[in-house]
Length: 306
Ligand code: ADP
Image 1 (tube, rainbow, N blue to C red):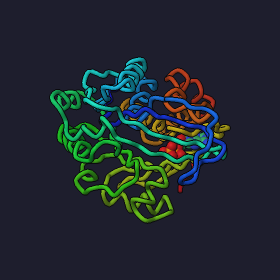
Image 2 (spheres, rainbow, N blue to C red):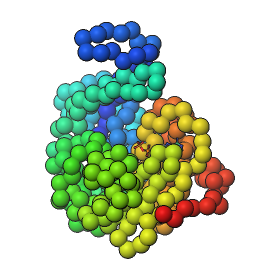
Image 3 (cartoon, helix red, strand yellow):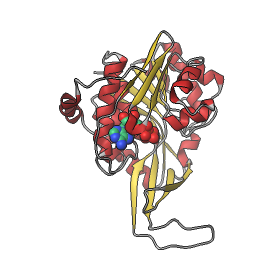
Image 4 (cartoon, rainbow, N blue to C red):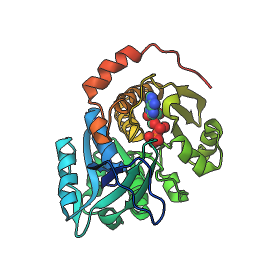
C-alpha cells in the first residue's frame, strides 16, 4: 500500500451562510452556521486515505474542544495521528462567510498550526518510511522547508501545494519534486496568467508541475517532455470546496502506486469530479471504490496535447 505523510494544517472551519456579506461596521443576520473540520493539510490527508493510501499526519491541534474534534475527524478517516501534536491553546480556525452568490471571505487564525515551526522527535523516521510527503503553506515556512529538505535527503517524493499563494523561498523550491498550484497560484507565483507559460517558468525551479484548471482539468509539465492537459469529467458541480486537496491526495496515491503522470492525473480528476458533486470539504471526498467505479466510465476519453 502506498504510504503517505502529510505535514500540514488542521483548522476548524466556522462557516456562516448569509444572503449578502456584511460591509465594514455592518451586522447582517445569517441563515445557517456550521463547524466543519478542515485545513489544507488535514483535507489532503483524508483525501489520500480515502483514495486508498496508508496516511500519517504531522501537525498540531489545540487543547480546546475543536482540537479534540479535529483529531477525531482524522482518526475516523483512518489517518494515523500518532505524531499529531497537541499544542497548549486554541486550534487553527478558518472564519468563513459564504454569500448567496457562492462568493466567500475567509479569515484564517493559525492557532496551534503556528506552533509547528520545525520537525519533532519521530517525524524524520516516519517520513523515511513513506513514498511521498505532501506539503502546503498553512504551517510556518520553517517547518515546511525542513520537511521538504528532509524528505529530499531521504529520497522521498515531495509534493507541494503552494497555497495560500505566496512567494516561495529558493530552498523550498529546490527540495520540491512536484509542484501542484491551481491556475491562480501559478499566476501569483510567476506573474504569468497563461497556465502553459506559468508551467514553463516554474520548470526553472522544480522538475515537475501539475497546474489544476478547475472544470478545464489539469496541465502537466516536466523538463524532459512535452506538456499535456488531462480534461476533467463533465459533471454538475454543487460545491468545489477542497477540490484541489482531493485532487492532490488522489494524485499522490496514484503516483505512489506507479501510475504514469497522465493516468494518475486522470484518476485524480475522477476523484475531484466526484467531490465537487457533493457538498462539504473532507465529507465530500470519495472512497477508492467510488473512484475506481466512476473512473471506468470516464476512461477512453480523448486527451488533448497542448
Ligand atoms: P482549487 O480547488 O485548489 O481551487 P481547482 O479549482 O483547479 O483547484 O480544482 C482542482 C481539480 O478539481 C481540477 O483540476 C479538476 O480536476 C477538479 N474540478 C474542479 N472543479 C471542477 C468542476 N466544476 N468539474 C469537474 N472537475 C472539477
